[in-house]
Image 1 (tube, one colour):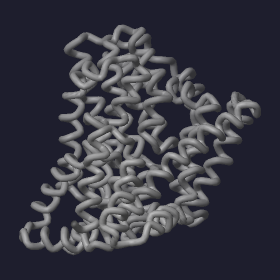
Image 2: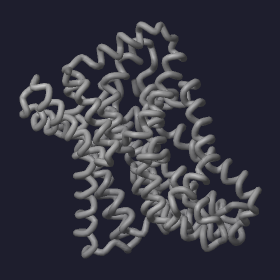
Image 3: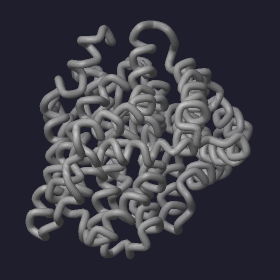
Length: 430
């Protein structure tokens, strides 16, 4: 039996018995190396370390640290007040506040899980106290947190750029802006419809002009962080990796000297949380790299490419097939290992058919990210269920209209390439 076949069978078995994804990928690689006896065991260590031995990957721990520093500097409360002042007084106002706040916060965290566990948990409690159904609040939060990996900076976009040489981190960061706004708008539409049905009322009155100016002024330093990152990269002041370091110093200055809420004694805990999260991300990347190495050395990308080419699909037919495949794949595999394993196989096929690499990247990233809110893996569902104390069955029941809305956005991104590639091309990215 070939190493690639052993690899695929074993990873399915490990995932089926509940082994965490990172360990399932590593153990299946070990199983394939032992049972096939075609490659030395040393290949596992070599390819795992090669997978994380990348300069652009240094951006990951720094962006994670920047998000932790901004959270420790009371950023969540500032953004909540800023978002709530515009929409909080409307019917379903706290639902809109949820969407707008998480959209702003995603421009700092780059992680759906961080958004759901941090500001998301606070928003769920606020909505519950205001009379919204707690399961609905949890479902809205989980569905909106999807924008975390879409709006820059995004950890998954950094990993994607490493897996596909035809796109840059900067191009993907810019490409995520319009899809991120579309997702937020879709969640607002669902909130409008459900709030009208269930009579979820607004919270308070529209603030005065002076109050709006004051709140906006306080939130301005936090809002400027993504602008600084994207603007600095586009102007050529720094690379994405250097931008992550700038983000850390900016977050430190904002928390300590602008908002004056970040205490030096809290920094060790922030560093510890950032280190643990970074370690978990790098472990997934490393084991995914060794897993993908066996598939590559066994000729799996060429086999898949030849099989798809033999189907004589049009570009649109190919994208439809890829969407269905990725949606199913994303149900069982988390986004990061999904990108590491699938992109080296699928991206060359897409390029051969003439699909714009930026457009294809956004389709892949959005599809795999959607897997975070679909059982049985659905990491975002489990996090949201845990922080909201809502049973998974009730949370899943409330998700249906949001999943339909995500489906509409996915169709738009698939069949209107300009939504993904117009802005990066207009700003000079290839």
